[in-house]
Image 1 (tube, helix red, strand yellow):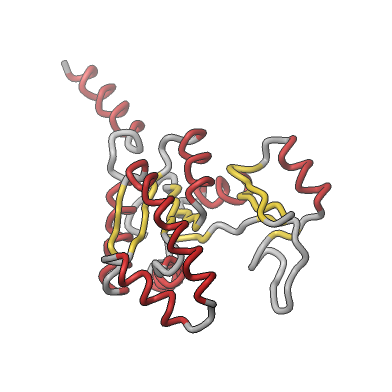
Image 2: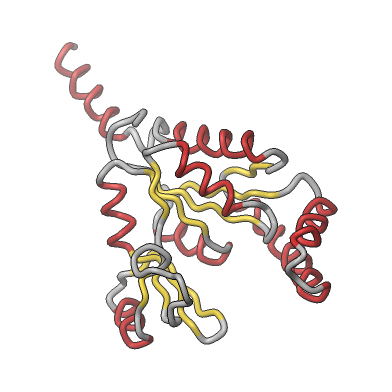
Length: 209
């Protein structure tokens, strides 16, 4: 690890088709100081999904207990199922000095930033709207109707991108991953994160003068 002290909490969002998942996997594979946050969900496991690896699977009642106990950094309900980020998992990894990455939607990112202003928000985008469309089309997995919905959603989401700390263009996966890594590592040296070091310097200076 290139630093000591508590880890940084980073939220990575992006349009569908921006390559978020690929960038996250590459970061985790190339650097040992990252931990990918695992979400809790009230939906049933799908074949091949593992407890504590894919998700923390909860019953609807258990999830609602977590909401009441303020045990989640953020949560939302999609198509009748809850999804959220458990605090304990994230904070324990940060206490170990790991930088925790959360790959979530805009709405969740804003919830977290409000509660924890130190959170680093990064938004990934392809270089152009045409490139976004071409990537979605090129997947060959979605109907034209679904692609049109995703493009419409991107046009709504773009209004909120200014609320993120960084915008990273994903033109080349290696360059994009390196940029995201550099941004997170430099966040370790912000004055907010280095408050203990500033306090130490202050004490030392007062002892000398």
